[in-house]
Image 1 (cartoon, rainbow, N blue to C red):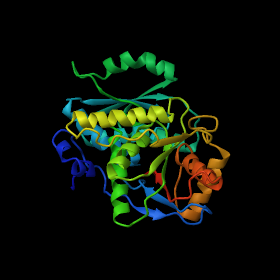
Image 2: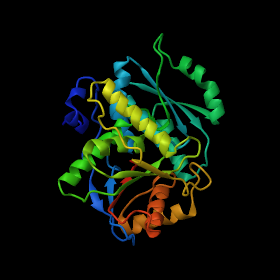
Image 3: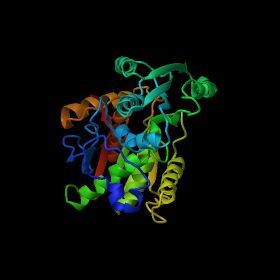
Image 4: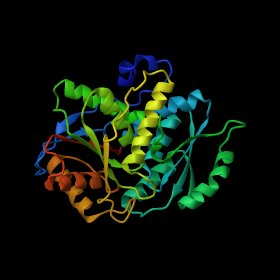
Amino acid sequence: MPPPLLHRRCPELAGSLPFLRLGRAPTPVRRLPGLGTRSEVWVKDESGYGDGGWGGNKVRKLEWLLPEARRRGARTILTVGGLGTNWGLAAARYAREAGLDVALGLIDHPVDEDVRAQLERLRASGATLHFLHTRTRLILAAPWLFARHAHGRTPPYYLPAGGSSPLGALGAVETALELGAQVEAGELPEPTWLVTAVGSGGTAAGLAVGLRLAGLRTRVLGIVVNDTLRLDAATLLRLARRSTALLRARGAEPGCGEPSSDAIRTETAWLGDGYAHPTAVGDRVLARASARAGLTLERTYTAKALAALLDLDAAGRLDGGPVVFLQTHGPR
């Protein structure tokens, strides 16, 4: 397997920052036809990434997180999410292949057919599921969860929702470095904006770091789809800078990938009634993207993000340059 682009860009990290390849790179880029946009819209399609039982951008985070769990001697990963968590399922499937157990703390959100199907996948994944219903009860249960899933004196390796830690964000650094290489190879023009849904923040933060490392002027446009976490641009930039601090701590050169203060912009107007609450405009865009552009979206993240892109484009708020939409949904 070829080394990650981050190790090639910063070879001093190869020995200090372990990586486990879980998918085939690079993911493709293509024009998105038939959407009636003013701007030239492209997609970087992460949906096919991942050689295991789930795909998409969550797998990118696990490529850095699973080796770290093993380096620490952990035998169990403890993480959290909503009832239909894509992150939790990806963690359960890939961690099991790596010889690690997974425990999931789950909180309630609206349930539809897609969520019911995801719950069945979670139950079949081998993960231990704890249905804690609310964020407050999850926080109160944390000491018990750590004790319950310790192996002797070894605690579980805790991963925040979505795997959005400074280390997990490196998955999106790799995605942005791929995009930079594709721009350099002439596969697409340098985009003005890279648009992504923001559910826990790690993808947007990592993209900002990776775009800087790649030498692109592209900015990240994050469409916030989660009202249970603070996900404004300043918060995402802090996470991005914690990722660059991690790179420096592992031996990278000072200033490596440091994003500028305007590297990320966030929009919240497409959230609707909250996390996992579908919106009418999202449902319309989901159907339109499938029929006209061959994109399979879902209602919690990607449909809302593409709806925002189309509305902002129609309002002339995307500066007229090429725009790349990050397709993160990867069902199997």
